[in-house]
Amino acid sequence: MTRRHLIIDGMLSGTGIRDAIAGGYVDPNELGLSANLIKRIGKWLLGYENAHYYEFADEAENERLDQEGIEIAKHVREELPNTQLDYFSDAEMRRIPIA
Amino acid sequence: MLGDRNAMFATVYPEVRQTLIAQALAGQQQPGQTSEPAPTGGGGSGQIVNLSAGDILSSYAKGAANSVAQSAVNLLYGIGQVVSMGDLGKMAGGPPQVQPFTPTSNYFAAQGGATAQGVTAVAGGVGLGRTLAGRTAVRTTQSNFGDLTNGDDSGPQYHDRVRQRALEDPVGHNFPPSYDSEILATDPIPRPNNYTIFRKPGSLNGNDGVFEIGVNKDGVINHRVFRSNK
Image (tube, rainbow over all chains, first blue to last red):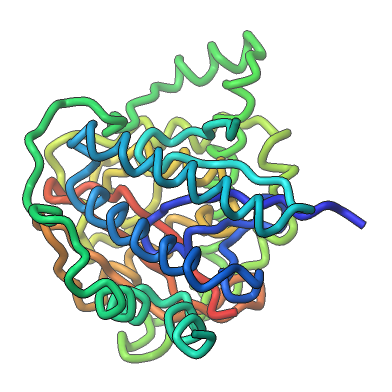
């Protein structure tokens, strides 16, 4: 069975979690994530959404959002230990490795 | 609470999601979060695509990996154009705007992400190179709207993010550009900083969902996604 591969991604109108294998976005509820983590993802998405509208002009805010996104990815990895996790910066349009 | 979680992400519709998030986060938003940040000129704002046929051909000849990937997207844009014209042809005479947008292209299902990484082409890239600054993306009257291979320079502008997203996640982002005229004909949804979102229900590869396009204050399309209802 193929190991699940998810990407934390703050794209506008996304759910914050992308399926790297099948493509598209995944409902965090379907993954069984904790309520606190889902709420944290929601707040992070709101920030990323606003940054998108302003075309990621605030570099400090972009960095803050990506740091938060990476932390979220680490927490998702903790809650889904059998899942490969990556992070994609919507501001920089590139994957950032998760240490 | 489980009920709250389900309510928050019961659907992928951003209107619902945003409302629920806003409610959940009432009082937690950072001061100034919605204020316009000082422009810095950086931060990955990207550049408008401006490839020439020579650029594409040169990259193709060199066989660089990046060129292969880039050209793959160009090909899919080109394929999408051809296939989508057939799809839209089923709506001969132009459907009323009140009808659901139901392009039925399966081109992407056939191509798949793997193909997107492995095929090269030139034709689509030439068209993308014809985007010019200063033209608004929100045009719905030109008969050739969304035709990225058309040479009369009257099509929409696409931010490089659109192509990058098509590479990164083709399933949700690489639908044919010819769909854009139908999507952009919907009622605009205003957002901060003169950003505008357009949404149109439809289906792609057998999945119902919503086609969504985002246009920045300069009239450039920098967001383009199909969100499945599933």
